[in-house]
Length: 266
Length: 266
Image (cartoon, rainbow over all chains, first blue to last red; front, side):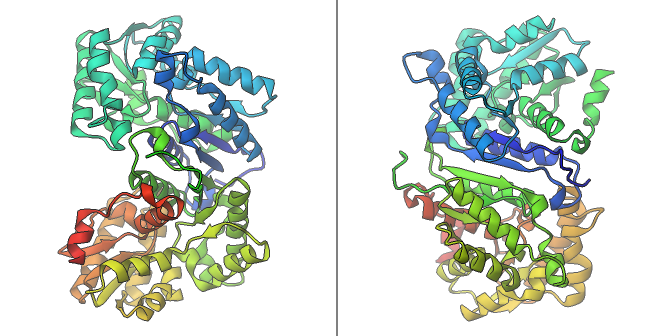
């Protein structure tokens, strides 16, 4: 597949968090039809993590600086560097309190970059491939949990949404990402405890009737790589976002959907 | 660990090849001392693979355009984007025929970016941690093989270098990277055959007396993740380059060497 003049350059706000950023880049590469180095898409991954304050911390305490401003500046910088489409692989940054600031800053600056919305892309994906499903479970950070961003989108799309109870959210799921001893962000690695705690909560959502579970924090797919658990689809918004970026950059280079997806959509 | 004003921004020419580029980014993240997203270093990964023609093809046919010019332009662009240190995770690009062009172009443009040399960094690493070793095996692409860049550096450092015979190089090792059906670059994945063929040649070098083996093509560590095989160290120049970039950006954020390295250096 040759590069064409109409092929667009992808920009990724890759520092929030950095491991999610590199996971998104990897998925863009893996989902691109390419047989030579030269076939791959142009992509700029910008890791400036120290400018972007923690998204969940802000959602829990709105007296802190809103990270949306720094994210918007980085999208503008990506545009100046040549990016024409951009995205941030951080679900929590899509909470309206943050996302609205990103959007209004980009609009005020007349930013020409098309900024993809991971939550919208995930919702469209579910409506397209999982229309037969009713109940969807969502695992996320406490910031995303409190913002109800996934339930809001999914319920509008006609799905019933199941989330953990607040105590489990606080005591088990959030620490799997943030705990200084075993959290994925804090340790920069998937500790056995983080995987165990997340996996246990996938099973808990399935037991409550979820027919698919969204790993709605971009660190979670680093720990749970299964595409299916007990016959239920495990939905990875990072993978969906990677495919959406390729679709926008050059749809001719997008790999066909994996067989598991089409089987499930039957 | 807090960001300091003196901390430098890393630039990576990540498109040659893209999977090696993202492997280097991942290793920079993994080797950084960080407990929060915000602790990670500023880094720009520039994937513009279609500008950089194949390095081995050029070394085999010097009538083709020299990819060094495109690489130098991308380093200059990384500098304009704010990078102060840069590197390219491609051993073949370090062959003098290409590397000399990169260096002279950067010099002519008075490029202020400090451009690290992966072969030099690997040689320094070996002299530091493997001074007790005499015989080092090298597996590479045919471009790197013909350029004798590793033997030249390593012999100057006092090591004896063992490489495969030309027929094995041509018929087994090069195809593990480039074969359209099972090569790592061509398929964008580590096929069982590619791993098998590379691993078999690691064993062959050990049988010839190698006490350590350098995986001197940045796609090889994607296939061989072992740090040690039959007691011999497997040397990953991408990992060494990742650590060199952190050392230059902010040495206080460099993780200590892995225990296997210090054990071996005893």
